Amino acid sequence: MRLLKALLAIILCPGIAHARLGETLIQFVDRYGPPQKKPISTGLFPPLLREAEIRYYEKAGWKITAAFIDITSPSICVEFRKANAAALTDEEITTILTANSGGMKWRQVIYHSASSPDEPSQRAGEAILAPALGMMMWQRTDGATASLQVLKTALRLESPEAKKHEENIKQREIKRAQTNRPKF
Image 1 (cartoon, helix red, strand yellow):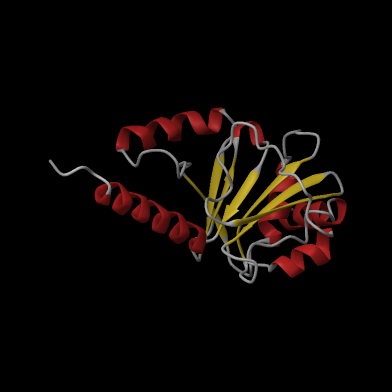
Image 2 (cartoon, helix red, strand yellow):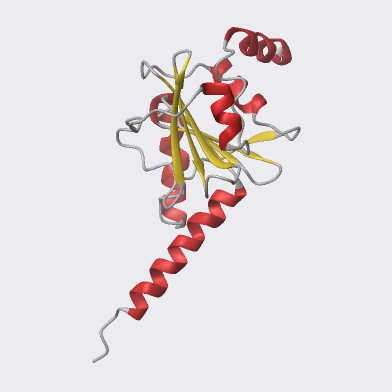
């Protein structure tokens, strides 16, 4: 039954079934046409990925934002949202996860925001509040994650490379702060 729902969703939502985490900029342009000139408003959500090449696409009622370390690298973060800001359905979520499985399995995990402190009390709070707000998270066998944002308005996929990229930025910021600290 689950497989039937996934296949039906792919047939009914062809615009989202093609985008995949790890595709190149050229593949995105082939699927969606040239990127949009202006950024897609993300409202209260954090930026897709700092210090990355970000491209914005719109097609078939969907807004897709993709992040690349540089224009020659594969996408390391992709976000899907409906153009009308409506919540994603379970079938659409399944379709996106299936299209981005890369032959691997997704499993649901306890929600944890990458921007939150990594403290037990914070994790416990997120574990309780996230489902009430429609926030869910999955992890792929290679470590990639998919996080459903507040009220199911966006699904963000991040490869392990995106996490390494963010960690490198944080380490540079720490080093810069230590270097710039006044010496009394």
